[in-house]
Each structure stands twice: as structure tokens, then as C-alpha cells.
Image (cartoon, rainbow, N blue to C red; front, side):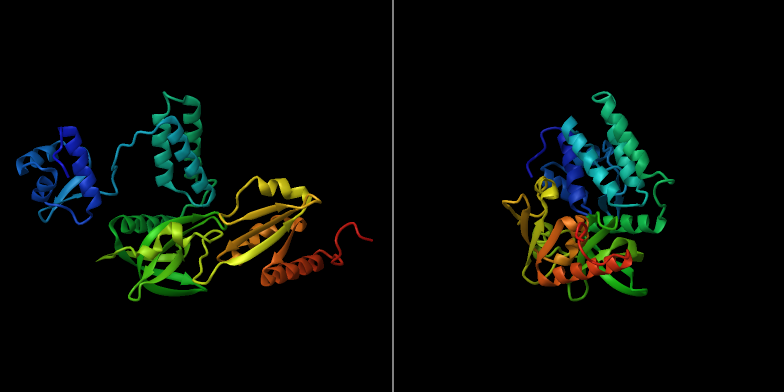
Length: 330
């Protein structure tokens, strides 16, 4: 790194270096990387507004305190607001951290765009409203420790409930992924000692401890590659499966309004219906979406999904006292 041209730039570089090195740096290491002497670093540290502390002769930055000042354009700020709204829609739990971030965003917009600032503040209030969302201290603690472990690349020990059984794992969290279906959040990573890839539902983690052991992120766990063929969160080691759906004319235009999957292909048929196809990692993950279209969609492929949907249709017809024949037929 070249020598800093001025004090303000050097302070920003010190903050960036400490953020990038969770094991901390000595003053001598900072001085060498910034091309200045140790006395200059010592003086600069007295002017730091970032939460820097010293332990064992090494300098660290408190990652749970306010870290950075970010300047957004109006359009960037609104984009962050929309992203937070999507997060809110993916969880039924209070999220004081997201609410706090939105309040800060709203305050920064008061002069530039007071109308938008009002809506941002309302979104913040919604995210930690006890009457509309569940208070779940355990979930919040799990999320906080996962976030810290993710930031510092430290393993965690988790107690995970599945099918009413508690199992324990040493786990390396690679990233967190909100999931609209079921209003939940998943954490993806690897379990020791085999480095096997696992996906855990955060709400099922009953207890978590932060370990000192560090980990390196495996290259084949890049999220863009991992979820390339996924419909949502489900992945598979096998080749993706071709899914073919036929949508009725009544909903064809609505289906075409959205690109549902990166591999999708759409063909409009002469009668106005729509033939939709895509290659999906786990087609059964699509079933809730397919169900949402009711009788306006027919599963053509794969056969196992078609058979399961057909059985569900028969079961529903029986449940509601129908004879299983389409409406309108005598």
C-alpha cells in the first residue's frame, strides 16, 4: 500500500486494514503497510473515531460497534430501503439491527427527501414492532454470533434441532440467506472435520458458541455458483432436472411479467396458453409456487412432481366433497 497523502486518507486506510485483519495488527505492521513511521501511526490512533482497541500488543476494531460512514445517493438509499423491506417480508421476527439501520437511513434522508424518509422510518418501526412480530431473543443471539463468526471467519459450535432431536456440530458459516418461503433464514457452510457442506435453518439452532478456531472459505462454495440452478435455497450435487409447466391463458401474461429462473424458456402457444421450462436443482422446492397457480397450471415434467400434484388434487377434491371432475363439466 502506498504512503497516505493526508491524515484523513490515512485514518480511512487504518480502519480498512483493521477491518480486513480480524487477528489484529501491531502499530509496526500498520506503519510498514502505510509507509510511515510508528510515531505517525500512534498520533493517528488518537484521532480515530472508529472503535479501535489494543489487546496483547495488537490493534483491533470492535465489529459490533458502528464501523463505517457510508454516503448514499438518493437512488442507492432507496435501494437499501427496498432490500430491507424484502428482508422484513422474509421473517416474522423482530429485527432491532435492521430497524436501527433503517432509522439511520431515514434520518439521513430527512433533508434530501422528507417524504421518502417518512416511509423509511415507518419500515423501521414495523421491523421491531412487538404487536406485529415475534420477539425471539434466542434467534437474535444466534444471528449476532453467526454474523460475528462470518465476519471474523471463526467456527461456531451449534446445537441444532431436527425432527425433535438435538445434534451438535462444529460449523464454519460461509453466508446467510433469507428465504421467503416459511419466513426464515438459512446459514450455509461446512461442518468439521470432513468439511462437508451443510445448510442449517437459523430458527432451529437452539444454542451457539463462538470458537477460536478459524477457517478458510472453500472456492466451490461461492454463492453465485452454488445457487445457480436452485429455485430458492435447495441445492443438489446431481445434474439439474428439467421442469416443464403449461399455464392457462388467464395467467399467461402474469407469468411472463417475471423472470422466475435464470434458465427459463417461454413459448406462447396458439390458444394463448404458455409453455414454461427451466432446469432446476430440486424441482420439489417449486411445488408451493406451482400450487399458487391452482388449476391454471399443469405439470408436464418431471413425472414425480406431476404425480405428486395429481395426488394432491385428488385428495383436495375428496376433502371438499368434489367428484374430482373439472368445474364446468356435467
